[in-house]
Length: 365
Image 1: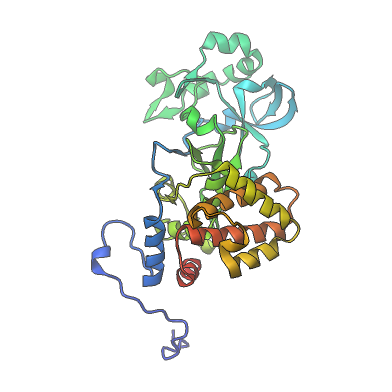
Image 2: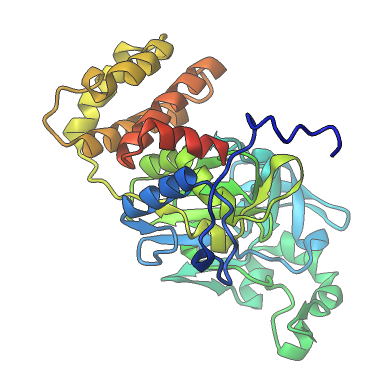
């Protein structure tokens, strides 16, 4: 641009890019400090979300025909739902239609109440879902059966790998993909796929969600509050941002492959330490801004007299802060949540042993 002053270097950052880093993977155009901060986050972590022994990650659910098998949840009546879409309307048994969350319900920290349902004719059978047989479907779920059987031909004409369900011998009422009970039948963490900031929230209601819109993370052992808090920090978001495809207006698309690359430090969560740290949080109730400021100036000395290591204290505190945000989400003010998130940012800096320059560099990515 002719208006650009090349001699004014205030906004120009110079850095070298080693040729041996330019492989077939996504090129990371980062300053040396940004690169060092990401490397430290990875080095100080124990594993990644791609560790299948510890986490189930993904969004496998596909109906193959949402116009028929997905519906508005009009009314809840004990064990029944009144459901409606452009093709069906009926009062049905709730155990064969599962509440479906969309991006509208995914808030940072806590998932909202769904307004839609997905037909789900499956029961858990160990580590798999088993399709109920048609006789059971017709006899025990007669309202759903009567509504859906009218569209049997349309449903059999759904395509799976270039063949129709009829050609492949699939049941007319089955779904395209269902995943496993690990995806949906446990408490889990959910996030949007397209994001411009950390957007992880807890779902303890066993909701389902469709492929291509949301991702789910089910930890097999890792504490759910801790992991949600860690994933909602700028450290993890900045680690993922350079490897995610960019979208418009500062957004990025986080596919399963990129999400699985998220580093995870695995702490020991100790009940007695959490109890002590929870009391410290309660003492600052109503003035979390002061706690954030004290943490910034005095670090862990302000929150615990424990002789435990700094990373253990920071991890357990991050767990307690995240638990408070999640469990008191509806009663906390926006300022309260913002200040508590600021505490978590400082705790993540301790966990990953980042200095101030590296922490600042992460915010610039």
